[in-house]
Amino acid sequence: MRDNTKTLVNFRTTETSLTAFDDACVLSGKTRTQVLIELMRDFTNKCASIIPAQIAEDQRSGKALRAAVERAYDDLRVPQPKSSESTLRSRQRLKFTEFIADDPVVGKRR
Image (cartoon, rainbow, N blue to C red; front, side, top):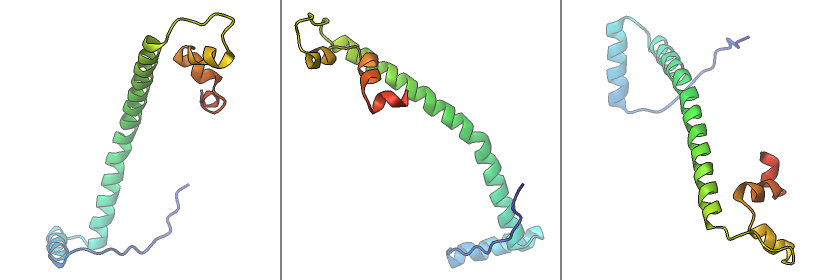
């Protein structure tokens, strides 16, 4: 359910912009308020159609970046340690995804 409560909005603009806007409103036969509400509605509708696509693109970019970091990390790692080496040293040689999964902070986000 939408809230239809009216709210007064004030903002600053140049005198030149306001005069030109008021003249355009008079020529269109609409009040300043009618035009501003229409502009806000149009802008909101335009953004509503663009934002999901931007979110999807950001997610694809994030996945691609993570994959690139994983490949780079895995390419740099040295062979798995012998069992006699320390746990800390072993942890440094894990694959990136194994390292992240073991991390108590980052691993929780997966």
